[in-house]
Image (cartoon, rainbow, N blue to C red; front, top):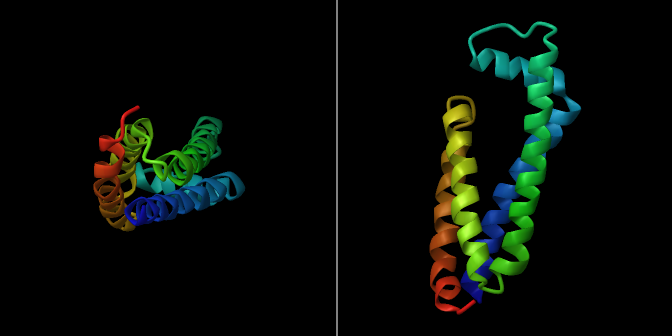
Length: 132
């Protein structure tokens, strides 16, 4: 049970970062858009499409990582197999895209990747052993 609690805490830390990033993207769309334009090697003009894309990304990020934290706190701590696989697949996809997109600007993502691997490792045995 201690391993599952530790795994849940690690996933909640990752989720908290995602919630912060989502709120930043929603509340400060201009600075967030500026960062995206910088990443793309261009300048942020008054582009409605880029602003809409940034807002969509921020809302998606907020909801996705909030759900990840909920899955970690409730079903993962109960060692439910589907929760472990959900974190493996959806967390892996999200972190993969996050690292590909943001790593040059937020190297902390490598720390989150290590935390994700640690959470999966800690929760694998109890989650995969349990039937159902």
